[in-house]
Image (cartoon, rainbow, N blue to C red):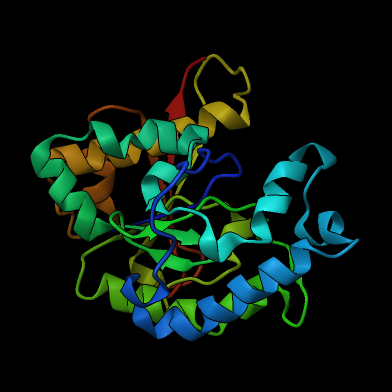
Length: 257
């Protein structure tokens, strides 16, 4: 099983000191040349007068945009320590049991607009770059990553029975696992029977909790229905067949708020 995780807009502040990112040591080395181009472009873009518009950053994020200008020197930390949004809080990689943590090292991949695909032990600095950013000399990041990520995600999935995608459509636009759509299950969260609409924060946290549950279960679901059975132990679930034989499945968890 491969679990594809989005980044989060909120990130932990960098360490006061420490080694910067070593691009050559990151997982999926085929992405190294593109990562280097993007890091160089992020630093150049962040120093321009129109940096906030290009990066989709608010003026209140000025310290983070300024930090982007020396991104290659910012102390790095484990990737899953960088992201602090509600989905990552629900996923709680640091709170996994020993066995589940070992599974996370093999089964989790986070997709980032700067670094592409990362494993749990990859070390990166925090950054301020939206997935829809327009970088100097590169342009939009989604089509840039679509030239490389689909093949990389397919390689990461390998012979895994099921691919669980926790990303929003915006982040999925960076690339889906090539040729494996029929094995891919997109995880969604819906309001419970009370009919009250849940907020985005709750939905993200529940998707993270679902990934945490899957890792702690130790399950290796052979297909979408087996995945639904594992998650059905905790949440009411609805599994929808793909619109076409080669399309991704949709698995919806219902929660009450």
